Image 1 (cartoon, one colour):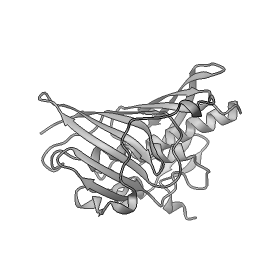
Image 2 (tube, one colour):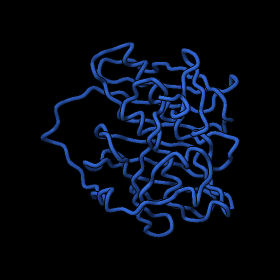
Image 3 (cartoon, helix red, strand yellow):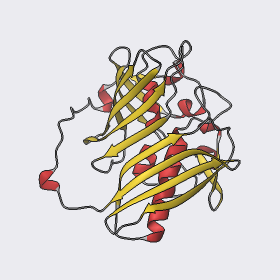
Length: 259
């Protein structure tokens, strides 16, 4: 597969370089942060698999976005903050030019047989083939937005049910888990259910946190999304996360709303 098809390719043991598919939506000269979030989850899993083979799973991914990033290479470092046999807290840090730009803290937890206890009251989304296709480039610019396929039910300002997928691998020539692939798409949630035209109001997110109660499966990623703005310049984007089997987690993003 051509390296140009991927979002990233590895150019050093801990260095990754973006392709044009990482181009940003708010600023075409900077990265859309979505796929870098997936890269950090991928690096956490690579570090985990090099250290242990007991199948501890990612239960939470929590990112803080420290600033914009040009379309240039980043270096990623991974450290275990709280070691444990059944629970670990792991941090991944992406740096550009020696400056931290994104921090990820991840809880890894041991699995237990709880199939007879599983269940949720999150409402099932309509299947992808019943949802109309939506050209997201009609609202947003950038290489990343152009790289994804979206189906969407627009339910009014700040409310939508969407299915998204991409034909592009996250990292060229590397096996990437479904969870890391999902992590590389989650930041799109802030753009599929806008309350106002982004040409009139800026509402970038400062973070993204996802809590997962099961592992996602291959196929479409479903986003049941609500965007809320407060009266003082703050907002929150909340999504229930689905695959074609049903809900598997929730995500939130803190927004800075700037007319």
